[in-house]
Length: 268
Image (cartoon, rainbow, N blue to C red):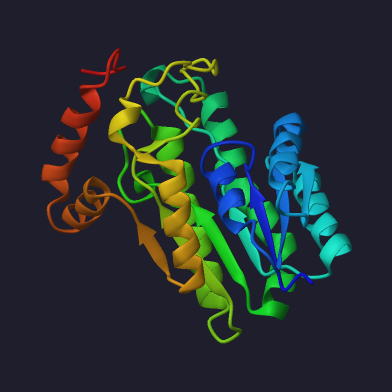
């Protein structure tokens, strides 16, 4: 019998896939959304070796109707929603001066509007279960990162949106978590968009030095279980958020210098 229903967007790879694997436990019904249905179905088949309650829904979160269908599929199958994890996202790497504005719009459509659309249709059901609304954000939602103008803008917007929804529903039992991993070994950087909208391909950062998607998923799972407000991961991430509150001018220089060290950095 399903006692908890969890929806995860961007579930075909990276943190989303790791979260799906972490939530695949007895008593949980999983609803997985992503643009790549082939990858979702392969994941579901793998999970079904020991776990039966999973459905997949092809979902482009930048399309409102896709988000509505994702939520409706969950209700049709299970009749309830307990957790919505807004994880789908894309990144970018280019300085704003050179950036085609369509790239920035694309990031806002996926990272911000995707969260808004899914949250809008899931909210009535989450209020009934006093469930959890989760946004997988980034340290870039606390500190503007050079070369990531669209990414930071979308994550700042996500933060403002989720904080508002949390406050509006303060007396209704809704749990809202804003989860901010630091640099994570996931697919999002490999598919990051360049100044013209093309994918950058190979990540400019050393994956071996980053937290794994599996580790990030473990922390997010625990934060949902404990109904935490925020989750900031990695020592570097926590330090960045803390110092930016007190010495922002100094942090501007530190972040600039750090990001400029990337191979083939768009600025020096």
